Length: 524
Image (cartoon, rainbow, N blue to C red; front, side, top):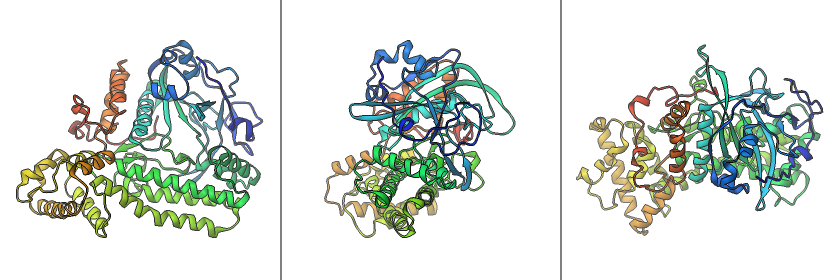
């Protein structure tokens, strides 16, 4: 197995001079050197052949003892100088000070086919940023992160990736719901992969300490390696950098809203500077369409990170990045202009995305009203978001509204309680469908083109929480077949995939309130 490291982050940015792995405040440093904890008996659960190929690894490499040892943390790559990043952040809207990689250790950077990839082990042990935690991760959260990272990639959502999932052979104590019922669980390590794991919080920690020198070094480094097309210097470069971070963040959030993904914990330390979905904790997909739903038990009182609020939280986080970059720009006006640009761009970007989901090629002035009316009726009875849009594509624009078999019956698979679709609710659906069909009849594109557009925007398969839980339950019993099955399924989320219809189904009733299927905590 050949992996040649070409590190930059831990070569070009200031290092913590203290090599002791003790909890502490770290100043004027972008990272601290630290080595992974050695697992007692690592076992490969699953590895992504696609991600391996992107790194220059072969299928045989994935089955080798060397791969198992390196990506479980048992051995260190030659020439590797593992480290944990120092960053701060706002958590649930409140400044939390120094946070950092409390259970993630960066192995280094690999360049293959002109692409740079940072390798990071999550759950590999304590770091100076672990605070009171053990730096470990459990199998359930690791299964969710591994599968979701790759599923999001194939959905076309900007995301960090996952190379491998390995059990450690060690037991980890966790209180899953923070209710005083701690129990031992199987430990695991995920190898996360991304061009960089830099977050908004990396900039915030330096700004919060008035460490402008380190802040500038980080900004220059980030632009040099990840925004090399920015050729201006000084304040203009930092402003253009902020503009591009805004645009990437907007693109990411629009994709989240398109597929019904809820991140669950959009703290500033969990928002990538590259516009990548990062830190898969208590995430979830909408089953019943509900803009107020959050999968995070910690977030239930205020629902700060609910589905419908995600675009606003992304803007709030960008505002915090603007504050962090202010010492380098020293003028609020252009920073405020970028914030305003996000506010102006989001409605248009959202409408464009929704037109795709509805199969509309052209633009008309009443389209936003059509979308708003649809969002309203979707909530009048519990309606599965993913299934609704796939089934909507089956309704012909010439459907007869008086013949319910011609339209309403086609939507029944998306309703959790079809018998409630009566009276005023039924009439509201009929009224919306009349407007929608009328709008379709004004399209010049063919029915085949409409179907193709809708299928490009609306996945058939997503990683619902109950599906992930089935994989977790089996994996805890030593059966990794469901992990493999879901990985293969989610590689083609937009395809019909004959024979896989069992996964194209509403959340089963047994999963409505089951732990891990409805709500999750940050425990992992």
